Length: 513
Image (cartoon, rainbow, N blue to C red; front, side, top):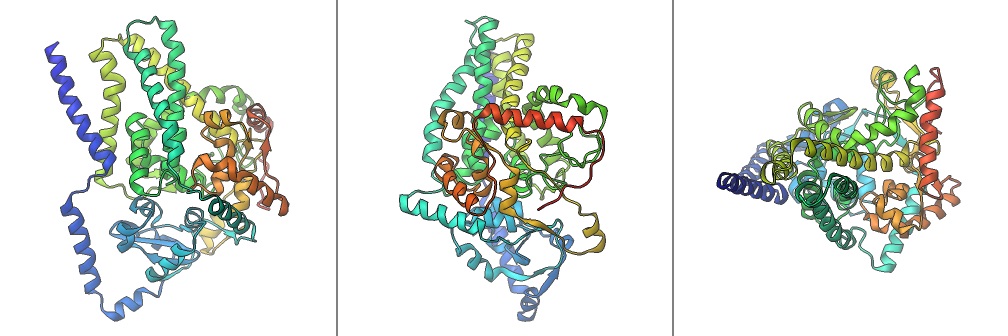
């Protein structure tokens, strides 16, 4: 017993250090001084002539791609290239969001995360160094006025009500009882020896759902910078909920979800959430995929496979994002050694409280532990996947294809004949508007359109501004995909799997109109 207590004490101390470093983003003072001094020396070395030349650069997307780190951070916005290296530490939205988007065209991220102010665009002017000649992926048609009008009306609503679009209060109010129930059900399922297996399974079901809700609420807002007005808020609550409590990775999630999915929603070849290859994927979701016999049954086997999402995410973040630094079509920018150490520390802490405590400290049998562990992870994965899938993979939504072969070969810019905001309307599905309980159970993903138009706004405000978007859609004759309830949303997803499984030939490219 003494040995176990000693081990527990040592591990607890290590865990405390890991949490402190991971959640509060410790950066040694010498590293900050060295970085600032290095930037100062670089600026002094440049002659006035050199500085002027830097303002007239002509870069291809391949050249822009090389400037993807804290030593040389370039972003392209609306065809202009900006050197934001010296701006990283003073960016109001934090250095992490800026580093996520450097080395690439950040136009879509810039406009969707700065919708209510023109100050950021004016601030950028002093960092201008040149023009972007070519783009990695097609650009979108300029806004015809739809997104501008939506934004002006939403901004006016917030101002008239005195609402902070990033208010953290609703998320924190909901998080406290959620966390209390989460750890209590964990205790009853994996620690307490007063319950039989049947009761553990029933309570484990609740624990699995709460584990999903833990990420759908405060974590999701934090990953989009929508939980408070300071990066410290997003960093703390994002890492706490996703890395340390759930054992996944905020770095991986932001690359996949924030950089990839949100900017190029439902575009095959750009959105990492849908199949990237015309052959070989276990799912057939878009017409460009070549049909095979197994797809006839995907409406039966895919819902079962959704339960593996939770387990997959903890594997995928290490072996794809951190080791290969890629996420399907999305390039992952260099990950710092400190982030890799934090990733390791969060995994160790998660293993400590999820496995070591129940089995090694409190004596749960290996057999019972692994049965319950796999069961609750299946519940979590299923809950998350279903809520994600019904919002985009549906007969109600539209899918598009990124045919960049011609553009890359010819070295020319291509433009999709659709506006970015219109893409979000066409590719997203809403349901159960006005149903507060369903909104809570899915982390407001039932307001998917609003979320995609304004990801930097707190999810708890979506029900208030959805009617505004609906009105503007009617004015511009745009169909807003709104279904009465979850049943209809699930049917839309199920029918899409079934219909894509029936088609037995390659049917050509989808059109963006």
